[in-house]
Image 1 (cartoon, helix red, strand yellow):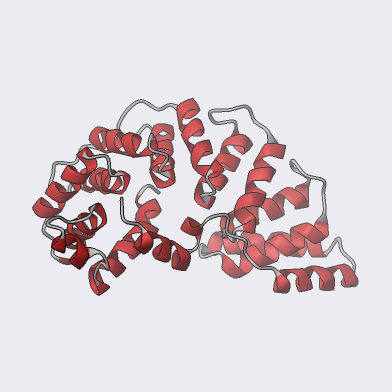
Image 2 (cartoon, one colour; image 1 turned 90 degrees about the horizontal axis):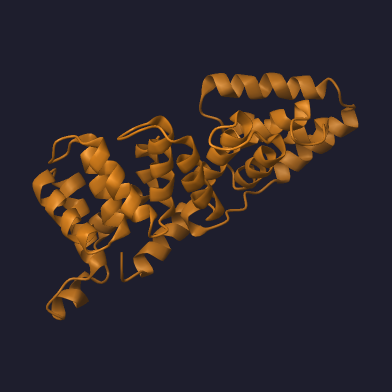
Length: 269
């Protein structure tokens, strides 16, 4: 799960490596490269050249200067033993340093490590607090993580209403797993008033977007259960709402296109 949270940043940096960093030339004219140019160069060493030694050195320099994105990638290199011996505890330290700078991706990764006991003792309470920070910032993967914490009582008291609230935020952004869990919540009245029409809409969306075959089958089966409790008119209305539904990203990091634009406009890490 931790590696999956680096996916968006990877795509951004791949783009910069392939098309070139727009600030690279101007930075060199000023007898120095910007942090963004150096980050792009280090990532190019990592993914294009497979030069792990240069990548590790580049990320290390930037990480020690306080660049949270470099800290995240340095953590990844420790996790995957790229140019350095595998060391989950060191990875955790670098994720923590980036998390303390309010980097939501690092906060999410740190939360997962704490809750799974990766790189140190298992700590549900601390993991939940970091997950909540990332969720508050709008990261939808963290929002479903917080929801699951409330559903299971991990690191916090069990609270199905709070779980449903966080599922709604993630589902509104288009996260299919959140749409599935929210649909099930409305089907069973868990933390929300039982509502078969609302359940049907969310389960319909989940069934269309889920990649996991078992979860998709669960969404379809549950949607059909809701449908048997509904009139034909209500089913038709729920289907129409699903067709008209549009995701509502809370921040650019949940929309790859706008995140790329925002990243390329930045002059610092």
